[in-house]
Length: 397
Ligand code: AMP
Image (cartoon, rainbow, N blue to C red; front, side, top):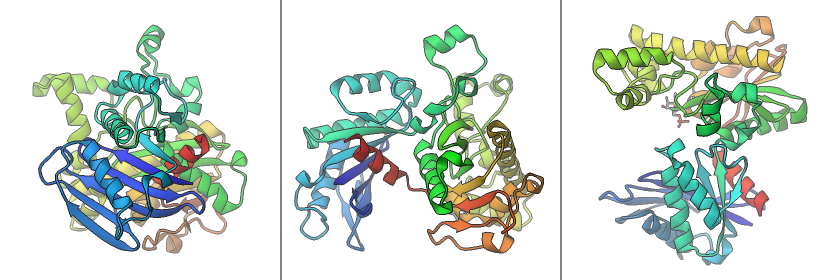
């Protein structure tokens, strides 16, 4: 079975064609500048990279171009579109409308339109991607795989905000979480790596990238996660503030003459480690600036690591113990200093790092970085959200 995975953004679209027999990626790539002059497709297959510069006024043009490449005599990996058994679409937010991976139908797409406002930066793009695929591949089975699904198992006392219950019922304002496919993948891989049944494990998964979230995974089910109604909540991120007292926003809006909407843009785009350091949202730049003596870069890194540590402690309490900490995503996979700072001070709780094992260059493999006598295993596991989307799609069929 071959599954095409599509991750559509507002002006970009990433894809992978995966053969589910052996979970091999046959081809992958991305379209940039959809609807903007200067369209470009980068397609990777057979160990080669093919670049096609062509205007893509709409997502339908982009998908058509991707399919042309997939069946191309030179760059292609399949003889015809018929070889694609189904398409799996990444969708950021499901609200309470969809609890699990869902087959695309006309009715489902009506509901998707209705909940688009829950993730205004992301869901409308996913809808464009689905509609484009339906236009170019009529009749093809398609699945919506939601970032939020893995968090649907949170108990009510974890996902509720303490607001008027009637408003929760009317407007579905609650914690939904994000990065669910990544948390699901790395928690499953952790159990596999350790040769343990996931049902017996208490795992904290730290997805630390440009956006960061931390989840408590007990017995294979998410019971809490750091992101909230939107991906603004939790630890400080590249440009996002993470958790903040909302009264401070009202105060700041008043002082700076910002509307609430401008205040949210401030929190989403100009805060986080960028706002604190004034240097960059990228942890490589922050590390270099700290090394050069920039104290605000040092502060940004310290705040990030301190908050990650606090979430680990909180989730240890929520799960009644801890067996495994997993680091993943751009920062989690590549930054030994951050990993060390996050787990340092947790020795009293059985968390002991092996400094030498932690200090390696990312080679795409799973690494065990805890000391031999650490009660809690610490693993670094490269994430693979596309594979989860393909697996979910295949399972639905
Ligand atoms: P992601 O959102 O998962 O792609 O992660 C992006 C972030 O990971 C970047 O903003 C960097 O801060 C960080 N990152 C990626 N590669 C490295 C690296 N080699 N060393 C340190 N940080 C990295």
